[in-house]
Length: 204
Ligand code: SF4
Ligand code: FES
Image (cartoon, rainbow, N blue to C red):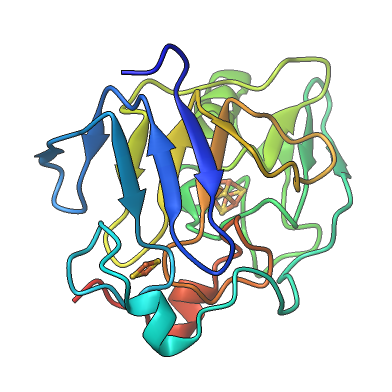
């Protein structure tokens, strides 16, 4: 194993991950890790999560497209807590909406109302936010427990505590948690922008 877990992008090819100690699959089961692994991010491998070279056949491009959100830090001020949100970084998995629907309602404007939940609930949501799109003003990012790589069913790679050689990131983003595209269709690769959900992308 390498000392420090890292992710390297291969141009128009897979994500090469080195030194991962733990990876969990879409079914919640542990995936056996090797010191170096090439993970599919074109969405088309027949050996997911591993790359089988199909990216060459389909002409996968590791850049291009239009991100679903802007790179801007939006501020939602409450009486005692202000929530910050960067739409570019958001993977739109809606953990926030599921965990605290009164505070996070995408059909409302403004969509975040910090006063609709107590501070402890807001902190739980911000910690669970896999992408770091959400922060609480005046605090560092809150990082959840979990495997270094968790593969979401029909969705992206959720990554904890791994450096990536590509420095594209949104304003205020953290290196400590990130969500990386696995379907090949994000407009903000290597990061997930939620396109897998809109496109109905499936693992199988
Ligand atoms: S990435 Fe964070 S802000 Fe975006 S939907 Fe998921 S929990 Fe909400
Ligand atoms: S990135 Fe190689 S098969 Fe998908």
